[in-house]
Length: 433
Image 1 (cartoon, rainbow, N blue to C red):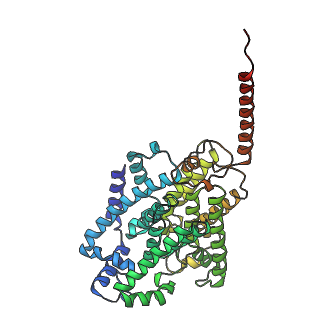
Image 2 (tube, helix red, strand yellow):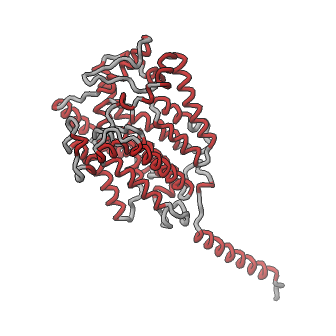
Image 3 (cartoon, helix red, strand yellow):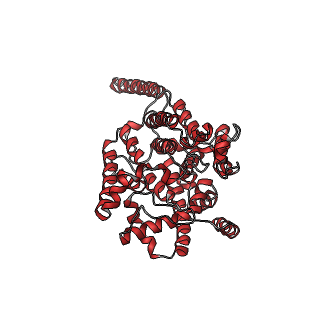
């Protein structure tokens, strides 16, 4: 099946060559870092794309200069395919999917299908690093609490692309202060390494370039699936200003609130991480559609919870459809048409931010009270949650007992004590001939 997907990708490339423009930018960044050139002064490709990542990322891109651009594109496709398989495996582990359900053939089959999810496909089209960063964060945060250096890799990811920094905030508000400071340490190490090797570029980026949103691209085009992109198109205003900033701040607060609640009240760390990822994608000024590769662990997390529930299967099908339909590319979007959508075109142009907002609202509603155990709504045998409870390193604090479970345990203890007293009395009674 994976071979069939790659053949389909190759046929598509023959019909419409994949630009893979971002890998050309990464290679140019590596060349500038290796030669001491102006890291933020060049543009490449016919779209005049500049460097937008911190200097530390440019250091990591130096090995891309060892290959020709044509060879690099082939390597990029193969590496991203491997990273997609790894992300599926990590997602299965994180969401508690049984080992028998994510064997090598199953992971390869899921990889073949996952390739055609719009965010994943766009990652291949542009030669992006999204899958690598998502794997790094999910692996790091999926380790047991108290694991040595937990959070450090997340900090390194933030040093490559700033948005993963929000996961340090998630660790902090869920009480894992050591891991949060470890993430901060990883980020500072990346900044320090960038400054030691590229001091001028570091000063330029951290004092100026990181604030230039327009350097990344136009916020109002359909490619931008963030809250700002949605608001710009709805208001027909390319610079919404406070009309975006205020909702973004409220969304950030609500998203982190939901992430904290789902961790503390339901004991579901993975869903807390997903909630944080969706929050970051919503409030970031620009979240291109290929940034939404977090759809892979989201879909696997939903798939792990569909047993015995028809409505959950319908929900999984609906979310899968959102990430495969490519509705943002179906509406007219050439030139400045993105700013002139009618009301019925707006949902088609912004499927991901609308889905993200709905997900945060649903999780806040679901965790409105702590009443049930992490098994979910008091239902025994939930595959995803109960297996997560049994994973090594899940702290006792996360195993939140339900009141009903406490009552049952008290009743069973009383019955056991009564039985023991009766046996003791019988034993003490004198025997007769």
